[in-house]
Image (cartoon, rainbow over all chains, first blue to last red):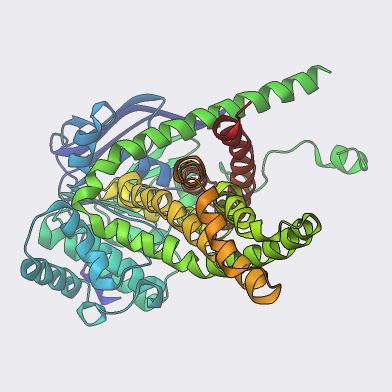
Length: 282
Length: 260
């Protein structure tokens, strides 16, 4: 809780200091539009939250930024580079400067904690073992798990796995970290720890953080700027304080957790009475 | 009728699309194999889990298949007074056919299914996506070493299977049924040709190793990342591998041993 109190969102960023610029983004799964003309700017050095109900495409957006998915239209620029026009080597070079924290942690289950954090260092640097050891211990110390370095990935709780994954994500000192639902399924202690770590790592290391989440209170506590996605587009944006005052029905439904509204309680279906009277035909 | 045609068309497109994906996958895996020279440890670890850990089932199965061959062969040959040719019968059956084919089927069931399940679960738990986001190509780090290790393992396992089979035939034929020891080995030595029989058997097992491991690795990599998807992919690995091995065995046998 203290961590949340300490988290003080910064003022709105200047528009020209953008690390990620998304323009006219369209992405479809079959006939269904996940994004339809989305414009979004992620400022450098800040914590930007992407919020929205389940199925609104938040994780998909992270995969598009990371170049794991290709948009049907529009552009995504990261640090001035169009992600989807890069060669494979160019994309991999860019990814070395990004970290991503997956919802599951995505730790390599055949490696222990130390080796998981050392993995990107061994793959991408020719550093001697003694230096790799020091870096790994520093990263683990930053997430409070230096003492757990010999544990196997399978022995970790959900919260510990995410902290190890966070240590791995910062192993190469990236410019940006993408967090995919970091708070889902966490107990209050793990949750508070993650909230604290995301904010502190952002400020101390000078990262840019993109947090995808539907946990309103936790995300709003650490975010400098929030985008709310729904219905394949951005339905709200602003600082957490500004969004709390908005009149947008979309945003209010999401921020206040209302069961019905622009996002309907019922999945689209034919007339209820007709459906019941249809007997076994349907 | 139109619906039937539509389904057939959709099925055919899906089949060829997947076939194309499998070949692109193979090309990318083969292209990345060169990097493994600098990372031999990755291949050695997989040789252990795919090859060494498959030894037990290969040893035991080879022994029993050889023993059955010895029994069946003796019962047939003894009617013609040719039981001293038992060694030839056992050895030729094993090195030409049973060694490569049965080893490949066992390998698909033991190592192929494990490969598919392992890679499929890595996909389902986002480990492959995590590697991609760390700028590590999973095709080179995960698929490549497993493919090479599986490909190398099967010919060796098939050779061990055949050797155990010959020993099994020897125990039954010479040890239990009284076939002459010297005749068993000397006839085998004079009739089994290194090039026509042994080398062709080795070529078969190299082809089977390539195909079975390709199927197993691709199925894991291409599976739907859910528990059901991994289960289906594992089943497909065993079924497709078995069909491919048996179909290819016929083609290779026709090419190698057709003297007409």
